[in-house]
Length: 253
Image 1 (cartoon, one colour):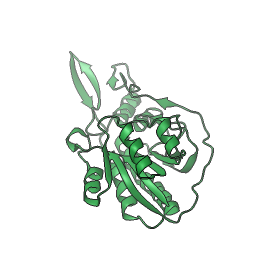
Image 2 (image 1 turned 90 degrees about the vertical axis):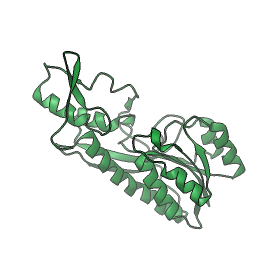
Image 3 (image 1 turned 180 degrees about the vertical axis):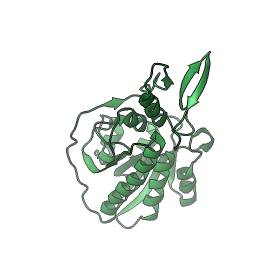
Image 4 (image 1 turned 90 degrees about the horizontal axis):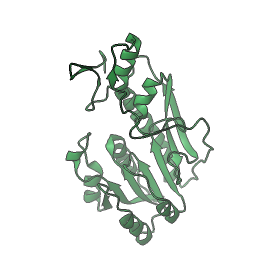
């Protein structure tokens, strides 16, 4: 039986937790969850995982700070043997993965290994990608580089923004996550496929300086950046004129 610790947040994490909770059966159960407790400090204004844990009497760990000792304690005391991560805020150490014998899966809302790390929706638009993807993969000590479990690729349209691409990825991510639930709810062995492709990691600083538009930019570059940086409630692309920012956004978000 899979005894699961779920780590996640953001809308995709909350949606996946809801699905995982609703489909529990004799082959798996959710024993503990790690997520945000305070919804006021989040851009999506949610803390559904915390609220559901309280209602369902599931062990909860607040992820506002790294609390690996409590996580390790729960894994050992509650005999947790599988970790699932969806949109979690920080990387697990190798010591935690060892405790579950590397039986740990992460849902990444991007195509791997080409789009590891952060702000992948923005970069996909900036890079003029014509397809995007989501990846459920095994977790290792190397970020976003474990073997694939399930992947899904879908087209990027010419008028997609970072936000519309994100919404597509959430829908496809839920579908992939339900594939995962299908397997564990039947007690079946999950696939393990070698990850292939050119690796590229985008750091948290990878968008620094890219939002500002220049008077020398071509119209098509301005249009592309307006789409790449449209993701409410975050800052749009902008011009700086006489020390003031003038924001540019696409006609359709």
